[in-house]
Length: 290
Image (cartoon, rainbow, N blue to C red; front, side, top):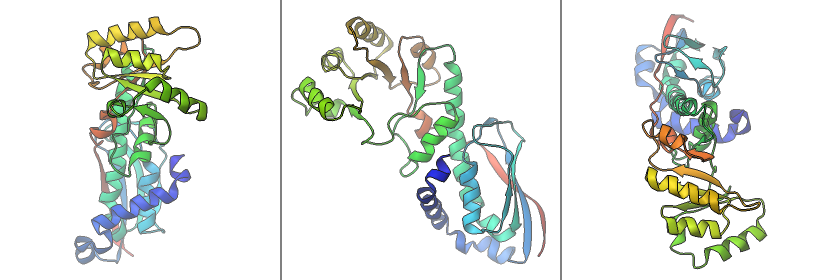
């Protein structure tokens, strides 16, 4: 579970979010509700989707009030329907109300990523390719965002710049001898894969000559993508068989065309940079004096 493995990092993010909202000085609740009430609230799905971020949601309330009680029978990755009750929170009304928006922001954003990922994954059930995310994430949210992608059934591309090599167009402009540089790197770092981004056929040729582990066909039109794939497969001899990734311009309208091609990976930036939050609400059901 990502939450337990990275609790310090996530706690830091939660505390910054609470500080940003100034949850410790909630004027609306402090002056109009006060400290003499207890409450029970229910988190309800307002739309269909894939749930993600339950532990983060709980942790927000526990940081604000460690004595609050939270009950949930659902787990991340669960498919929820509009109207489903996701969890119940009971305790002092003031911290519940003060932490509400921060908690909702986390779980709605992460569930939105899981939901759109799940839609893309389900569209590929009969295809060879698998759906991958990118590094196009909100700053400081990457670990959570990539966890949400996994909850939706997708796969994670590199977590950061040190986890694998991707040589992009700007790198290519500064590299004199690509094949030589790749060969030197592989001798020193045998277990780190190298991917080369290609937008033209000459770049594909350079990637093949350098024996890249993965060849990314980036922002190519469908005709050129098909031709590049055919050439890569024909040029892959012996033990050298690079994986092919399609990237750029992938959305719900173009996915089926790309999925029909002979590739292992389709990376989709919109999973994490343009996902729509899954609508939810936290509704107070019981209030009473302490």
